[in-house]
Length: 464
Image (cartoon, rainbow, N blue to C red):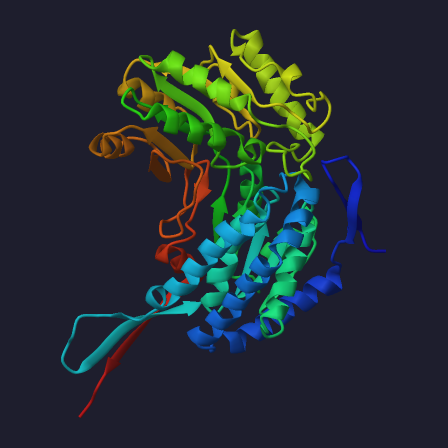
């Protein structure tokens, strides 16, 4: 008897779909097929790989409306936004990584030496095991899947049980693209099956996006093996708004960075530090813009804030807010102004907290919800100290008119990406990475190809 699982739609708590978990035979067949496919795919040309990957992008862009609706029903993001995950972010990242492959994978020539030819060639690893989350199911997975395929690897994808259709869509895209059998495959798996696959000798690299506890589980599963893993984990991303910031621009972008996708983004804004000289004006503007959100049915075009993924996630965030208020924080948003807000359901109104400090979990622990705390600061030294007072370090941002100041402060902030006058965005030309408990490894940019390949040195001597 095969194990089954259900995907519960947060829209109305109904069963959106049911699927079967893979069994032992499915897993063995997938691993064997991946390994066999790699023997020929590794010898394909970059042009052949690029043609396949470009057709994959074409499939997703052409079907973005239907896939967007599927995504809304699976995880609750408003339908006015879901197609853009494919037509904008997915397309941008995939296209950039396809275009950069010739440069990233080209031979590295050593300096000329008489009688010798010396160079370093980047070889594919084998089978890449991609473990993708539900919150940005295509944007996170594309970071690994496209460069893995472009490097000559094969890919085995396991998607979150909240978004299983995303894995199935990838399979259709690679079939549409004419990819050889076994180059891309997916499996629906439970946690123990994931651990067993990681421990299998036919897996050569693991690309994981998820929680800190999930990252630790991946490390434990691979502890007896000499392979690497890329781990993109949690965040508690801060922003520092300086007195010379363009106030309207800072408010508009930080409200969006805090509440887009109902705050369910590892690089979303969860805490803001504002120069005390402009603190009141910033808070007033921030609250005013927050009140313009429309919480409701995500299948309706007018909805700008959908449900969180599960009632338990919303309940966790509500408890953080309540605990902060009990410790002296002030909640500036009246939930009654959002009729769809209902305790015990995934529908949660946005919340802005002042009077917060770092004794409160809402300023220290990941919330992953439409909740943000705002604190005044006296100077940049206090802002730097507070931004670094976290177990996480994925992104951080500064809002100022002084670029030299932004760079100087950025050198002191413990983060993977440092923004000026921007937040909650991945530039595919730059390395996507984190520090501390936000994980390790790198995706995107030409550096993203390094972890998906191994260097092989050629030391060739002529004789006679």
